[in-house]
Amino acid sequence: MRFDIISANTNILESSLKHGLVSRAIAKGIVEVHIHNLRDYADGSYKQIDDSPYGGGTGMILKPEPVFRVVKELKAKFEYDEIIYFSPQGTKLKQGRANEFSMKNNLMLICGHYKGIDERVIKKLVTKEISIGDYVLSCGDIAAYVFIDAVSRLIPGVLGDGESAITDSFQVETGFDHPQYTRPEVYEKMKVPKVLLSGNHKEINLWREKKAKAKYKKILKINKN
Image 1: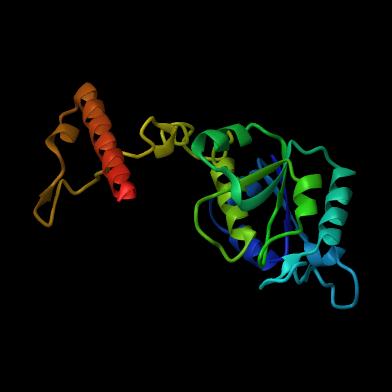
Image 2 (image 1 turned 90 degrees about the vertical axis):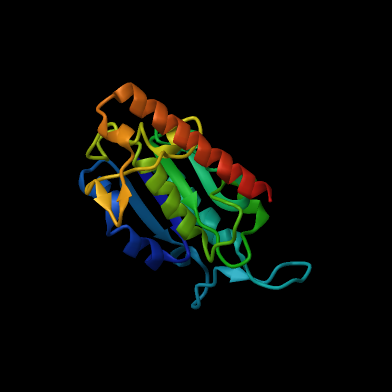
């Protein structure tokens, strides 16, 4: 899979991609990540990529020209399954959607910055707006890395254990994992539940399902308050 990222903060992504799961996927040749600096496509000696908003207001807005130029250049070379822009108004990135994206070949990711991006970019170029949650980030590059990690780990061969991605917490019905324990059996007078030591896989699975549902109900109750 190939990711092309249009960024105004390339250092954030470049440093992040040198470590962890995505870097291993790149080393294996399963994933390609190419970062394109928006300033390389800007005008003038100052390479300006932002300007004040029409109509007044605080903050700066990413200009349309540099984005259009880099997208045009990339589309002349590659065909993209989706051109994604990360925004609070976007569709929530849930596990099912990450599963769908993992089956694509080429994805272009446009990272916002400052107070947003010129609306003409979204209307003309973007095929999907994605949100990773109801909170504010300093830039879309952080969201892009979250997206790449969530999608890449689902691609066959990326994880060491082929079953890991299938049994992840948000792949199950509740969206939450059950409590996990490992050695030692007793620590600080706290014991591992007996059912996990029984060897009875049917009972273990029932216990895990029950605990996961209980955690799910607890979170739902907290979120309502």
